[in-house]
Image 1: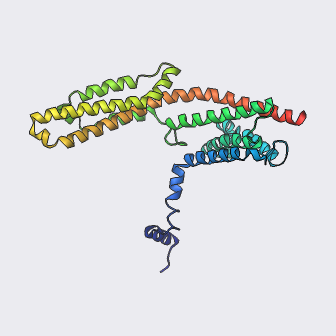
Image 2 (image 1 turned 90 degrees about the vertical axis):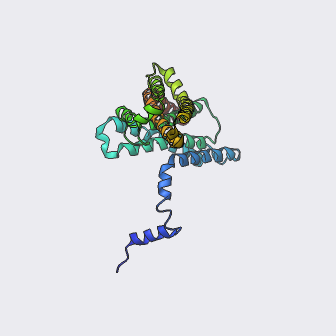
Image 3 (image 1 turned 135 degrees about the vertical axis):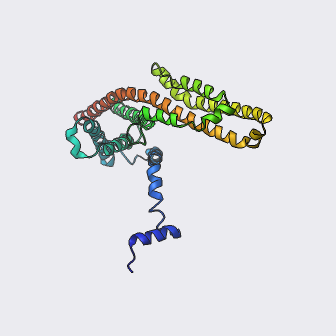
Length: 307
């Protein structure tokens, strides 16, 4: 009987073979944490370049340093393909939009790092400083946009989350309404009051930023308050009922699970409203920064070669 390659690979995986294990678990782990690995790699390159800058192995005027300047400028030009691909359907032939979104983020971080190697981590003329500072601002703006984007999408490259879908999850959350009404009569009212406060739409940019920074803390504090209220209420009822006393731990566990799940979903909906508005504002600021970067790079290249 013939042995299939799939069976051999499966046997290796179940036997704990070191050659079969990375084929199953390591790619999944890498895909899940690839943003973290990319961040660590970027930091490693920055530290290495900073430590070797005194040796003057690279110069912006000639050799590898000059080539790195060209590569950095090309990366910045390629960054234009993502907004062009997003706005013009005729450019579908260059590839799917999620792929170009990933390329846009990778090149947006790589270009400033390459530019720092190009100048050997040292500041030069005024036009080169402006170009470098513009690249750093655009890279920082892109990282902020990536964080906001992940808050309003299912996964980094997935489809945009639907507010109605998230609200439906909240309605599906509370299991055991009868139990809550019997043993913790005030819990539903207190949760409803908190939902009303948190789900109130922010009025302006300042309210959006404040809510984004304080929402996690407010949710945890409210969870602790509701936990304390639940424990005291069940203890009080346990003194009056042997049934409650007998199942007190199970009752408390059920209510805690309900509170934790419900407040998590409420926080998700509130974050959606906040980060959706922040992303719209960020998008209006990021593109002018990018245009300023292209202009500064063109001026820098012209100044270097003409003067």
